[in-house]
Length: 253
Image (cartoon, rainbow, N blue to C red; front, top):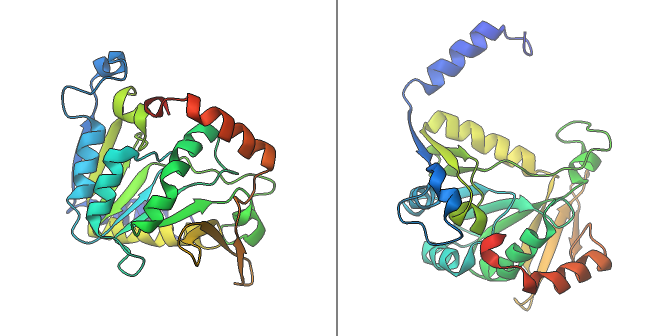
């Protein structure tokens, strides 16, 4: 038994929901790993997944622990015409306090202000926010850290895979991705998406002058707390990243 519903009934319900769906699988060839950070010669999982995102007519919500768009990605982002009002592009990723790859985070942070200016809604998972609000349950002293790579496109398609949106996934790593065409599954995923953000993530916004970033936290009572510096981080960590980031090639992040 799971909850109050027998397992067999839950499986039947799941099959009924997925029955009308179609699915596509993307997979890189093993020889991609020997490419040495060169431009791939054929379509990769990265190329095919971005093509699915680019074909969206309504909106795209992306969950990625490591997100380094590069100039190529920024061109695609700016072409979307996203605004906070139309919510055409939403990104959920790790905060500095929750990431396990601070240099990759530094690569993402280079583009963060420009993404906000381009109308992207950005949420960063806080390492202790979910624990403090307990909206997702009591996880003791565990730190919240995002590792899923998924997306919801047009409230119809659900993507899950191994690919991060960064240079290593594009050039070096062999990846796999699955896109399922199922509005019912997409709506379920959207519900889970919003539940996970409630009290568990900082919402980023532009400052009044439009040139700085603010992190907005919602506490257990629904009150908003505004941070003007990276939350859940210390000056020493920020200094280390500032010193090391210029020496790491973006394609290696």
